[in-house]
Image (cartoon, rainbow, N blue to C red; front, side, top):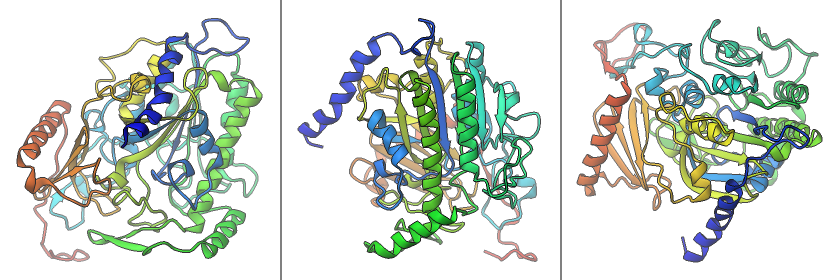
Length: 496
C-alpha cells in the first residue's frame, strides 16, 4: 500500500482516538450513566465477499452496506473455526474452541460412530456449551442488561439452550431447529422455541420482527439482543420474488472467468451467480434493515453498538456450492482464508466515525472483552483467556494483536481434513494432521494462498510450528487418532 493510501485508511481510525476518549454514548432521555445497548447479528455461513461493501457485485445488501458507511469495516476479521458451533461458543465465552471443548458442529459423528474410511478418527468433542462457562450474556445480565436471543443456537440440547446461558428470552434457539432436519425457512417452522406464524411466513423476517419487538419493549433500559440468523445456511430456499429477480440478473450479467475450479477432490465455485442463494442473502439483508429501522424510530441508533459478522466462511465446495469466496481460497470447512476470514462490521455512531476501515486482525474470542470494554464493564481475564479487546485497534490499527490460532481435528463435510493453523503478522502456517505436511503463506502478498513458501522458509516454518504446538498444549486441544480400520474393505466402505 502507498503511503498516501495508508494515510487515507488511518485517518478515520485516528478520529476514533478522539471519539473514544469522550464518555461512552448513552440513550438520549435516559439516565446519564446508562451504558450503550448492544445488538449482535450473526449470519450463518455468510462469506467474506457475500456483501456489497466487501466486494460482491451480484448480491444486493444495502442495509449491511449502510453499517459500513455509518460504522467500521474490518478487513482481516476471522472466525475461530471453519464451521459453526465452535465459533459460536468462542463468541460467547472469549475462549478458543479447543479450550471450550466444542471443536466441531454439534451433531457431527463422534469417533465411536465414525464409519468413514479416513486415515484418522476425529477427536472427541463436547456436544454442548458447558453451563459452568460464563457467557457474554451472563456478564451483561449481571450488569443490568435485558438479554435476548433469536435464531440459530446450535450449542447444545435441552438444558443448554439460551435461557440456560444468560438470556432472558429465547425465540428459536435450540440444539438445531429452524430449517434443519427437513424443516423449512417458511412457517410452519417446527421449532419448539418459536411459535409458527401464518403459513408461508419467512423465517428471517420473523426473527427480525421478534428482535425489533424486544428492542421496543426494553428501550428504557440497556439491552443485549442477539439476532443469530439461520440464513444463509442450507437448505437453499428463497422467496420466489427474489429468486426470479436474481435468475434474471444472472442471465443479464456476463460471466467473468471460469465458473468452477478444483480444491482437493472437490469442485469449487468461482463466481457468484446462484439465484436462490442471492435471494437468501437479500432477504437476510432486509431483515437486518427492519432492526435498524426500529433503532432509528426509537431514537436509539446513536447509542447502540451493532455488530454483524459470520460464524465461518461461505459454502463453496459442497452442499449445493451456492457461493464463491474468490479471491480467497476454498470455503466453509477449510482452514484456508475462504473458510475462516469473515465480514465484520461495527456501528456505534456515538463513538465510531462512519466510513472507518480497520486492517487490524480480529478473531471471534475477541468480542467478549471488547463488548465488556465498550459497555463499561470490568474485564474478566480469568474467563476470556484467549480474547483480546479490539477497541484499541480502532484507535490505532498498528497495535499488535498477537498471533491467532485454529484447531480443527475433524473431517469437514465440505472436503477439509484435520489440521491446525497459526497467523502471526502477515504469515500463516497450516499443519495437516494426516501426514504432518506444512503450508506457509504470506497473506500480504498472496491473499489467495497459492504460493506455499514452506520449502524456502524452513526457519520461519519451524518457529511458527513450535508456537502452534505450544498453544495446543496450553489450551488442552484434543487430537485425532489413527483409524485402525483405514483401508480395510467393508460393506458400504471403499478401500483406500
